[in-house]
Length: 120
Image (cartoon, rainbow, N blue to C red; front, side, top):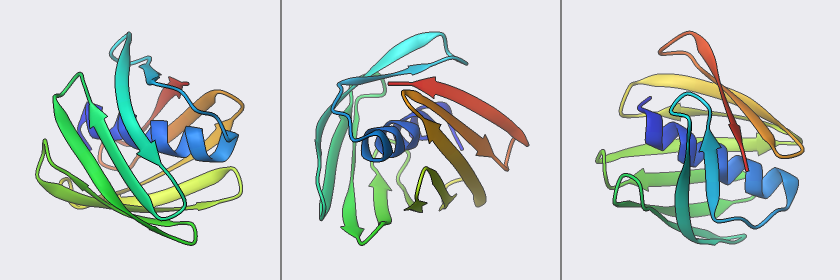
């Protein structure tokens, strides 16, 4: 998965699991805050990544998310169970998984076989 879609997924999971509203996610790999605006509610997601200059939208059904990343032109799906999440990035054709602990998000990207860390 590419850097910004991965950070946006961490942002979504972090906001939902920690029940927090924020306007950015800090990406430790890129050493920067990524400004994200928009809405996340129980049925829809409509976000704009100001760093990449693109939208990420989708629908929510229970704890399953079906998203489309307009900047990279592909779908991403994932689900949340408790403080953990897992999903599939159709752009890279790899799975990912992660967990949220307070404001900290750890996402394991199977494409790169490593963890990536974020905070909201």
